[in-house]
Image 1: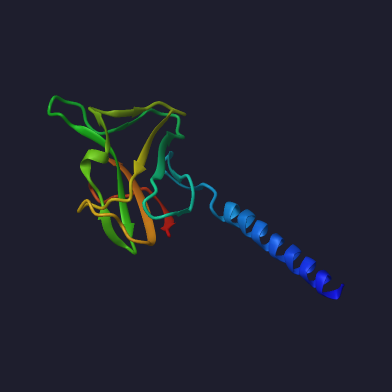
Image 2 (image 1 turned 120 degrees about the vertical axis):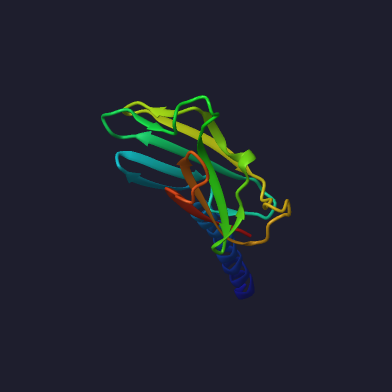
Amino acid sequence: MKRISYIIIISAILSFLISGCDWLDKLLNRPQENSVEENNIKYSIKVDKYRYNIGKEVSIDFTITNKGEQQRIFGTSGTGGCLSVIGFLIEKDGQEIFNYPQYWLAYFGQLVLEPGESKSCSFLWNQIDNEESAVEKGNYTIKAFVGQTYSGQFFVSIDFVIL
């Protein structure tokens, strides 16, 4: 009888730990978001979770919002094919591994934001680096920027892990 009681208690503890870990995993792996506000412009970046399995797409959302009372314009007008670019750069352990122009969302001419207006773009990264190789497990950072070209000035970033 005592042995059956121990088995029941151990089974209950194991069941709790297993379901508790699932709950903890869901809590820790919820969407991650970061935002920065500078000169009445809010830059926000979001990933759909913190931890990704190797080879799974990383869903990235970037939003820029005019929090001020005046129209804001990014880029220049003209006929030279000027671009205002919303770009992404991905780093692994502080080293750039992904930054490829074909993945940039480009607005030809100017990117205009009226007071209170937001512009958003989404991007799915397939865990392939600039050399078109699959990435390894590790710690990653996504940086987003707005500018006429890739200028190295990033406005907002967020970290995630590939397991």
